Length: 127
Image 1: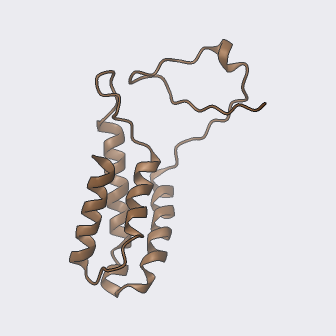
Image 2: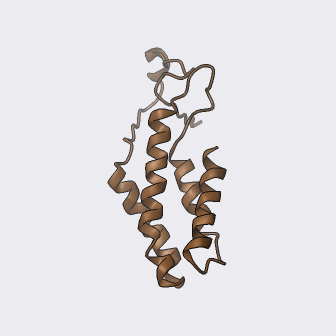
C-alpha cells in the first residue's frame, strides 16, 4: 500500500504536523519558483499560443505575464489566510488558471479585446 500526502506550512488555521506522524513518510520539499522562473515559464506558454495572432497582440505576452505574476505575488503576500478567512490560500494553480484562460481565446483581433479577456480571467480566478 502506498500513501501520498501533501501539506503546507502551519498558519492560517493549519496545525503543525507532529514528528511522530512524519516519521512514517519520506519527505520531499519543493521550493517555490522564483519570480524570474515563473515569468519565463508562463511567457513561453503564452507567447507560443499567441504566435498566430496579430503583432500587436503577440507583443503584449510579456506584459500580460508580468502583470499576472505581480498580481499573484501581491495576493500571496498581502492576503494571507487567517482562521476567520481560511479561504485566502493562493498557489501556482491560480496563476496557471489565469494564463490558461488566455489560451482558450480564439477571437482576439486587437489589444482592446485581449485586455478585456485578461481582465475577465484574472477576476474569475482570483476572486
